[in-house]
Length: 115
Image (cartoon, rainbow, N blue to C red):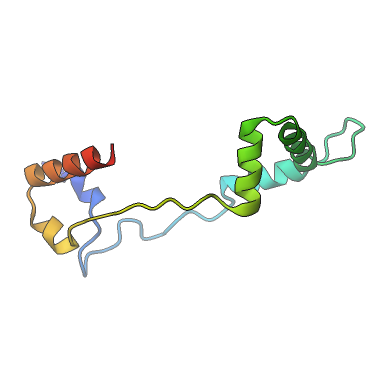
C-alpha cells in the first residue's frame, strides 16, 4: 500500500530527507509579473501608468464616500486595526501523541470556539 496522505501534512522528523529538496522553483512570482504589468503605460494617449490611474480612481471613490475605497485607503495609509485574539494550543509533543480520532475531536472543538 502507498503512504498515508496525512504524512505530507506533518513536518519531516529529524534526519528525514526534505520533501522538497530543490525548494521553490526559480523565476518570477506572480506579484512580480503584476508589478511589471501595472507599471506599463498603455498606448492610448494617456501617459499615466495603470497604477497611477488606479490610484486616481481610488482617490475619487474615497472622495465620493464609497466605504470600500475609504476602508482600503485608510488600511493602506494607517495599517489595519489590530484585533485581539486568544489562542490556546497543545504542544507539538502532545499533538503527536494523539491518534486520528483525538486529533479530529480537538480540531472540531477549536473550530467551534472560533465560530
